[in-house]
Structure formats: structure tokens, C-alpha cells
Image 1 (cartoon, rainbow, N blue to C red):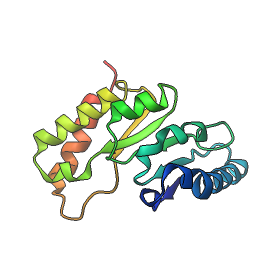
Image 2 (cartoon, rainbow, N blue to C red):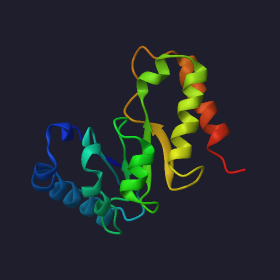
Image 3 (tube, rainbow, N blue to C red):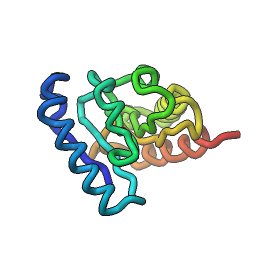
Image 4 (tube, rainbow, N blue to C red):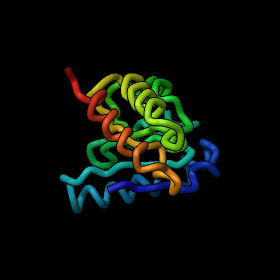
Amino acid sequence: IQLFESWAHHLNPTDFEIFAKPYALRAATKIRLAHPDVPVIFFANGGSSYLHLQRDMVAADAFTSLSLDWGVDMGAARAALGPDVPVQGNVDPSLLLVDPGTVESAVKTCIDLAGGPGNRHVLNLGHGVLQQTPEANVAAFVNAAKTHGVRH
């Protein structure tokens, strides 16, 4: 289950801590109590400027990982969150509008910056697929993930 804070980009760090974080944690805790084996992911759209405030949201009784939007460099996110916080993301969806070579490069870079294949990272877009994205570029994304996201 992924919990979205879709308006996080309108919150400064203090407001996030007061008006969003406690309620997201409360929801995650209730979900985990009812379904302890189901992963619960938190996504603060535009909340990459206060990742340090989200780090403690990943806990045994709350969220299992954080989803990152494309507005944060994956290396910077990994530095802010540390190597033990599972993350999901964060290729810029607009890159899938370019060409398959650019898509493959973006996928490889994202995986590498997250710490390499299998390093508590689920490759994903930093938000949804744009409507005008060519299907061939979605296939390039998937193929690049298969190629670069596997430990050798």
C-alpha cells in the first residue's frame, strides 16, 4: 500500500511535521496493525526538501519504505536517509519522452546512486507515466531495469 501526501510540495518542513507527518504515521500504524505483512510506502510528492524529517517514518510499526519524487538526486537522498532506509524511485518521468538510450542511462544512474542493484531500492519513476510517453520507451525502462538492476 502506498500512502500519498499529494500536497507535500505546499508544505514547508515545519508544517509537514505538524500537519502531515503525525497523520501519515497514524494511518501507517493502523494499516500495519491490521495487515502486518503488507508493505506500506510513504510518498510525499515534492517533499524531497525535508527527507531528513521522513527518515524516522520508516519503522517496524509504521512505513516500510519511502518513495521519492524526481525532484531529488538519488545520491543526495541516499546520503540524507542513509543506506538502511528502503527507497523507491525516482527517475524523472519526462525522460521517458526522449529516446531509449537516455532512458537506459537514467535507469542505470538511478540504480547506481541508490547504492547499486539490490541495495534496499525499488526502481520506479518519480511519479506516474506521462500520457504521451511512447510505449517503446516504457519497454526501454523495463529492459534497462532488468539489465542494470540485477546483481552480477
